[in-house]
Image (tube, rainbow, N blue to C red; front, top):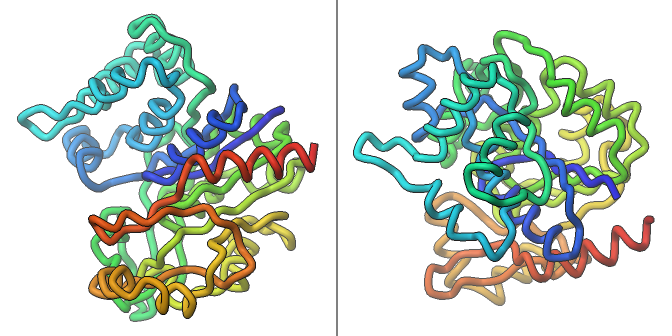
Length: 317
């Protein structure tokens, strides 16, 4: 079974772990390489924007570490006094050593750690580029860090592109074309998901693939990206950026409507409202989430997702 995930941030590793928990291995995780915020932004700035972002790439790779070796993931997430992540530093050094051959880098990590990853992590492009986006104020912004900085702004994103235009990696295109299932993971709609459709070749690969496509929506909204979003909005935005009339076959969203959730969880609703965020649910969905009452937070539940993946993938196989 050839399963491909497309996405990054904290959502993609959860989906990868859920797939592994469901018994699926040899997963291909494709992610964007345009991040310009946080520790990645520091490194890209230091290198004069001549390197790609490896933050999502490394997160996906670490999610593929076998459970009995999870301590390695903690070690590689160590942050030094310059706010540089140890894993990023090693990954960039190996990328240079192997002339941007990320699969050789992954093999080196396996030898270094004495493990075998349960899949492969692939960047959507190896050419440095930046996100550009236009908002309802008719302003144009540059960099994913700006997208994140304006997360609570009512200055909604209306269009996104990349500059310069770059080509997708051949490995990502082959994986998409040959996939049995493609899963769009939760995460920043523009920064983690849609941006993967922008490098040259991706839309054609999506057109040619015979894979069943699954979209897993976020549990809560971003004010500047998915405010008051409905399932029809997801359909329209994916149609626009993939060029497909039917961009996904299955939509995995929460099993409560926004109104039902707000009535049942008023404290959590208030906590998210302070961040100008709300529950993204329309009813008739899936029980895929869990509540962390201590922090008034919602998270996708890997165990629940594992059961759903088993059911969906077996049913469509």
